[in-house]
Image: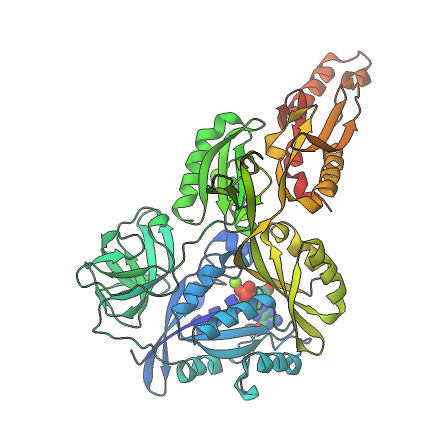
Length: 595
Ligand code: GDP
Ligand code: MG
């Protein structure tokens, strides 16, 4: 145990976590020569393309230092706000963290919130100033920020470059010298922390865990505390480049367990594994059920693909426990599924994987957050869809999720950011200068207001200089109304949205205008109306057009005429017929494109 070091890397996206991790693997001889495929830790195509690590993994290295051999376990952490709970569990499995900061960029919001998590977990922080080879590095300024933030000694900050290899040896030495060896009682009942799991189509679910107390032997019967389910630990081992089976995992070790588990929902990140005989007295603190935050309908474009879509989503769910779905139907779109996601990035990933891995063509409806409705009879229920809204006669009130937002920005943009946040119902609760020209702003805001385009807007008004992170702080009562959209008098359920009362009128007006742009003119007038209950609050009209596409052909070549008609028919296929109006796909996401 005294020669084990468990650590993770805290860094903002693109600050060089993967590149430096590769360097550590290379320097310790964990990967050699040809094996060193760039960025070993990101092994999903999608992750590599997007440059973010979606799922955390771990890798073990041997390191020889002053005549002794050390086992270093690097636990990788996901780098996006949608996955911050997973980050917190990876941190809980470590005694130390490398804090990597890009010397050309300085500290970002994501880094700070993960850093606070690490400090709360009493991790030893090793600050690393990366990309020192870049001509625009500002080491002194960024060192000021780091010193201020963690109160370290300036000399403890390691100057490094994942590109040239500068500082890599110093980092490895610091891991051994500064990070404490794991503690824990080897003779106590088994207590292992699940920090991740992964689906493998041959082997089922692979559980990644850190042994906090006790030990685990191959074949032991174990229990997952949160689900109460029991399994035999058929294979256990450590994580090198590949899994290496072992007969025993001891206190302080990081490893994997394969036990014939079929679906990812049985293995919950943050859960505790113990022995069925001689169980531990308490679960490891900090376990949380991860709940989806954003919901949207996913419908097959061709209704015949409904069953295929179900099979595809089920397969996706095998290795993505945070994806939820239930069948739903829409008068406008037919049969589909209401899916729950951790956030917008997660939703995009699912959509992309459905397309790439399963070749499914789908329509996604406007995402919404989860609301809680209270009725006058005292009933309380979750609303995943605006159509779940109880009728006004029984509705008492609605609650919506709130978040605390952390924004870090150069001071030049404070004014514009405050205007943006105010428009999103944000309340400033704290501001704090990090250095003379960088400030941290803390806002409380409804999740619904930031979930769609807040980040893009923030980036564009600050020319990319601001960074942003958030976490949920519970539900609050809100004055929300259901806004319906009617096309030629017929309400289109897939276009309904829940809106704060104060914004409903301007929202109604803008969505009608947007739909007028997006819905093509047809052979009759189309009335677009926005309504709250029976009250129409806005109206636009799309004027009729009599479009004779064959007129151009002058009655000449008949085959040309036919081709043109066929082309027009194809164009129609991407439309949904609603009543007598044809609505293009993009209209269903119009809400996301309002300015
Ligand atoms: P991650 O998102 O934190 O994992 O960052 P990556 O390791 O993927 O690096 C982001 C980008 O920065 C890539 O284009 C790297 O090639 C580049 N990069 C990483 N470290 C360095 C460095 O030390 N110096 C320079 N010049 N570029 C680096
Ligand atoms: Mg990376």
